[in-house]
Amino acid sequence: MAAQSLLAQKPDVITADPILNIGPAKQIVDLCRSMSLWPMTFGLACCAIEMMAVGMARWDIARFGAEVFRPSPRQSDIMIVAGTVTKKMAPAVIRLYEQMPAPRWVIAMGNCAISGGPFKFKGQYGIIEGVDNLIPVDVFVPGCPPRPEGLLEGLFKLQEKISGKRFWPNPPVNGPFEEGK
Amino acid sequence: MNAIPAELLRIIIGLVAVAVSVGLIGLVMVWVERKVAGHIQRRPGPFEVGPSGVLQPLCDALKLVGKQLFMPNGADPILFWLAPVLSFLPVLLLFLPLPVGDGIQTLDVNLGLLLILAFSGLAVLSVLLAGWASNNKYGLLGAARGVAQAVAYEIPLLLSVLAVAFVSGSLDLAQVVKLQGTWPWNWNIMTQPLAFLIYIVSALGETNRAPFDLPEAESELTAGFHTEYSGMGFGLFFLAEYANMVVVCSVATALFLGGWHGPVLPGPVWFVLKVSALMLLMVFARWTYPRVRFDQLLVINWKWLLPLAVANLLLTAFFVKLAQFA
Image (cartoon, rainbow over all chains, first blue to last red; front, side, top):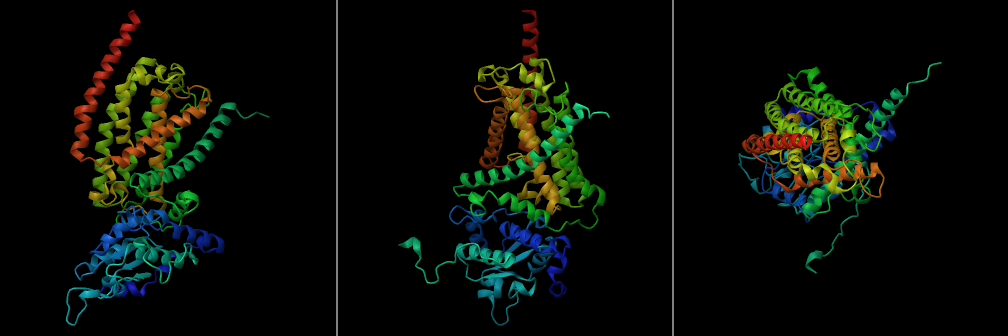
């Protein structure tokens, strides 16, 4: 299956560009990459609704420069796998991932994309149990579905992973749900 | 020792200034566009990267430079990489005859308008090449649409420009501007309001801006003619689009809005102010109106813009002749 061949191949090997591997240049480019992560217009199930909500007025992912949902995989940097990956959909997911050019990242959004979620039971035949069986995943955002804040936090984690620094304040650990008060 | 000819020096300085300003305009317009989009949809837009997100376009540009360049299987390697360069380079040429202020003009030719209209036609070629060479059905469909649209919208655009040329009796942009006065009621827009309207609508069609952005309509064609372009290949198309907008708005300013004329402030300031106002208008139009269907696009052109432009031209010619006899 295509999944095995893909897992064997490390995405960093493709990224290796001699000029961009000089220390400061790499740092600057990484910073820019983390600040302009363009997602792919791509939703599989109900988590995609939350992903759309992140782009809308209340949460506005545009604040962090990630609102440019590109229709073409060639121009996008992250793939937000938002929803259940069925076995019928799996080849398309792999293909879209393969179509993205080199520095590329994947966010697995929601329990279905992480592990199969509520559809995982003994003898199930329809779904892939976790999208990381198909493509390498960088950030897992748990929830069923995750709240939009959750996806934003996932984006921050990815930015931290790329640039090595967290830019935005941490959320309160046991903080009250502030809008109700 | 021979001195460098003044004209050559002038052209070199002008070219450098144009190249720098095109880059800067691209960066600023990306920011403006995203901010306007945000505020129209009741959200702040880019906000955290630099104060109010001003560093956002810089990050985008550097990211695009650092992205893997990619060519699909079966694509034509020469044409594929020629297309983005061809979309960007002629635009630099279009800036040369633009009169920014009184005497501030890189290339003083008496057929400046013709030069701009001729070379802006090359943009269509780049769209066609990009769609054809990328060996992608969406790209090809986008290119076909782009050509049909550009051919259609070029005609009313030319006819509306011609009406102004009849009134001024010149194709030299600086000359056209000189014939207009300081105050708004002295500008050509007062005598040619219909031509101005036709020009703006066809300009939106010519630059592939929404609501006429059918060559790259993402709801039907993935990304249209630039579906297969990654990194800076896509970046160049992006930059060329904004540069084309500036040219189109500058020509509209020179032809209809009195160019550098205006009270109190110096000329170039007025020119930049008018061009920015027109660019903002185009950005607002993009985020206000939904995309038209392709048949609607052609109906607007062939059934409305073209007959109106012809009627306007005939009337203009009639009154110009009448004024000669009077």
